[in-house]
Amino acid sequence: MYDYLIVGAGLFGSIFACEANKRGKKCMVIDKREHIGGNIYTEKIEDINVHKYGAHIFHTNNKEVWEYVNQFADFNRYTNSPVARYKNEVYNLPFNMNTFNKLWGIFTPEEAKQKIQEELKEVNIKEPKNLEEQAIKLIGKTIYEKLVKGYTEKQWGMKATELPSFIIKRLPVRFTYDNNYFNSEYQGIPKGGYTQIIEKMLYGIDVKLNYNYFEHKDELYNIAEKIIFTGPIDQYYDYCFGELQYRSVRFETEVLNMENYQGNAVVNYTEYEVPYTRIIEHKHFEFGTQPKTVISKEYSDKWDKNKEPYYPINNEKNNNLYTKYKQLSDKDEKVIFGGRLGQYKYYDMDKVIEEALNCVRNEIDE
Image (cartoon, rainbow, N blue to C red; front, side, top):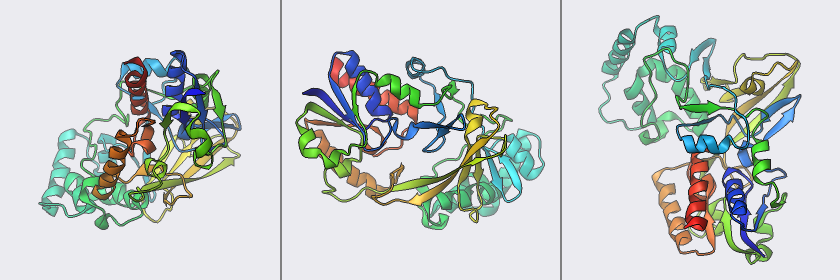
């Protein structure tokens, strides 16, 4: 008999298990995958820590979260500075003075603001009817067509004119020559990858992998006083109100017999004709000097139940549907839902840690 059955060995579930275990609670963690770590899992290939489920760059302004995660690994000084490739042109992201200089040949913030204002006057969009109009209203036609349009259409699998305007409420525009994408006070990558963090969190706790909760639901339901569930909330309730929607992602990873493929950890491909959204070169996350390199081409993908759900589609229809499941879960005294799937919300890693620690406080400490 356990105090808690934790479904999912990702960041939320592992933190809860770790903290509950410290407080003398007996926990079992299960995961349907063959490895711990969820989507932050890193695997060593050619002595390079490969982010198997896409680039995970830790950043936060929360000192408590930063100190918490640093218990489990030493972090390097990596700063996320992605670049965007459009045809044979390369631009810095987020949109900053380096971007504007390359686009228009201007040098000062005043010139950049003037150029953007000129473009905004030309379009004269009062009430944006779709994402395209919203984006053009925010940053003008040049930036939109080169750096937003194709990438967004690949990401969502729809034309920008068919997407609702609320998806892009704002676009980051900086009038400095700073390429730091996040601008968070604390930022870095764990030296040696993320998997070690989860291994340390789960040390001494019973863990079962390749073990699907739904295939063993009857036997698992009563082995613990409570269940911490980090899978899809709609699946837990057997889709009784209908299915929540997601976008998925797939990766094509290959080892290349060269030291350096693209010179940066992340390069976005913003033209629609290139099928992948970005290429990740994993060694650059840890300033690697290995003789070979590993790259992953990332493709945005239509989701179905056989694919991994990555990004919740938080439109009005899905949010209303989630509200019904949330109301059902609020009455359920046996189960606590956590993480991006359990709470149908896209979380950065630091927010997952905040949520998990708050869950422990509310559940065990109070």
